[in-house]
Length: 132
Length: 394
Image 1 (spheres, helix red, strand yellow):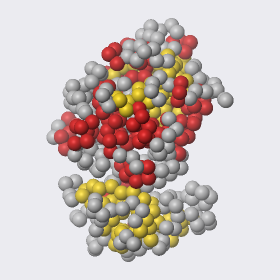
Image 2 (cartoon, chains in turn brown, red):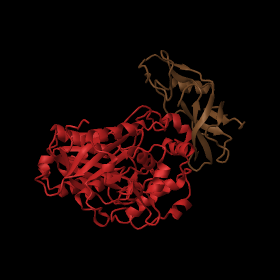
Image 3 (tube, chains in turn blue, brown):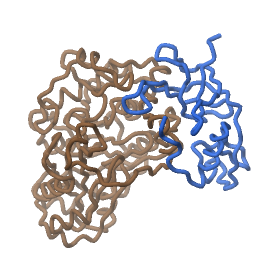
Image 4 (cartoon, one colour):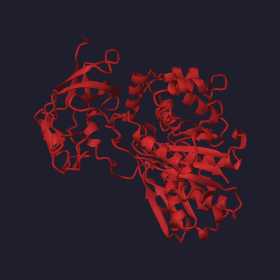
């Protein structure tokens, strides 16, 4: 991929993007009430605290929903998933679901966090655990 | 039951539209001027009396500001103007408040859409379609999803709906075919000459599975406008007035276009609750529902919200579906989007739904005129941003 991400960083998203360069998922989290906040914001929607820190989720998730679409115009379709992290209800990270196909992708599947192999701009990806 | 202080105090007295086409030969500003001028002429209000202008900024590219329209049409007495958040019906909800409050007497509320070069490969070949520069990302989340090709959360919401409730692609087909069949009776619709059967729909290529291009609104060049004033002043004007029973817009909780939780419907709920509470009416009082259909799956969500059948849209649509006519009739009585909606008439982001409600309530809808309808529900937008209104024949 020739594009280097991100296209824009701001005060709220810089920690997230810096984490990705080290292949670490750092999500915004309220320092007072511990509510996870993604996409990152400057204020906690639950307790209104401005004490927003970052924390590393376990990487365990389930597949909430997905789309099948090319990432670049004209490119091959991939499975883009909304991964619901186990840490909090509806804490959704949007990421490619590695190795999933339209035939094998399953809403509700257990997911594990991995990383894309792009050296310049690693991105979180998830992999479906085999159906037990 | 509380009744809104401005209920039925404001009336729509004029409507206007530019031509609606894939290639109008007009600039986006020219289209806006066409619609505004047509609405003022239709209203019978003298040009000099127009003192309010309400517009909307769009979710892909900007439309033109009130100042542009005032200069283009030589409107020199504007004392109230506004550029509201989408969807397009919000330009009317804002204008209603301004007229009710006395901020202006005669407001024109307009919206203009254009097939910019950002919309399609075909549009990029036309040198006259270059969009104004500048990114549109008011939710500030675009960079987070750009590496994934900006996946559409609203499409993903329908995938979740299928999983959770057993909803099927042919349920969307009922919505699309209904709107396309109504569009055949609308001489201004871009799809007026292109019939679509359920078999055609089911055979369409799923470009964003399970959605096909038929599930997505038709990009066109078009603008629309309404003139509004107080119900008292409306009595002195030539058209049968259409009164605003209630209007509102709803935003609630997780509303990001890409990261929203999809399943709360909270923004729909706060809007619908407000409209019913402020009007004192229920869905059973409606004679027409013009349901927003930027994507067919959004219409399905709206049907659930408007008829309070969350999770049951599939069976509800099956009950309403007349396979022979290829149309929907909810509760055995209430038709949907008799102009053809965004899917059949063309994409003015829901403003066509407002104009059609006015035509039907006036009794000027021609070949598609319903039998003396008195009340219409108009919905616009989606779970991230929405607007709605209940209109009454005056």
